[in-house]
Image (tube, rainbow, N blue to C red; front, side):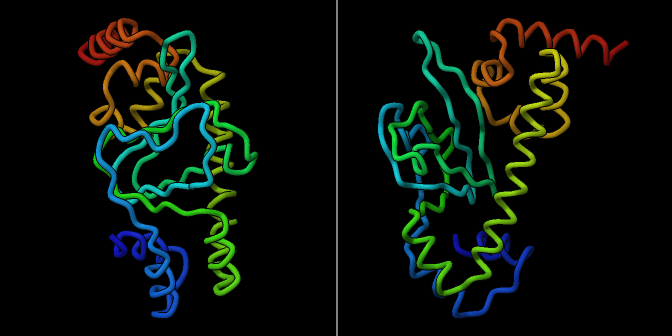
Length: 193
């Protein structure tokens, strides 16, 4: 498990053996089964997540219907809003696949950052990159039609099409599952022409 993390980190920084040992000693690696709810709407949490392997989904329950807003897969991190606000979460987070996660708490991060300042710098850079990407994704979503959203997903995250149930993909795209089926058929037909 830790090798997956070290490989990712070493794309950004060089790790000493002390730093690797410090990370391992934090006991942050978790193996989580498919279907596990990591956070339920209405709960408070202090845990942040980084996906080493697998997929987690963020969704709201609105009038009895699940509305998916995000998927996080390999080498993506996620901090629920409630960790920072100390309020109850408005959404739920669950594992769509058997997953290997890094689960951390802010106190753990502070301890690591004080011992090894380059981790804080790395986290700041990665957070800035994530924030920029989320803004780009949000703007693209708001400005595009459902068909364009699907085509963007096909281009940028084709792995999700194989990993995510159709009804959750449709929810993520802001459409009904039947509309997604028709949209896929229309795109397939265009590609044959």
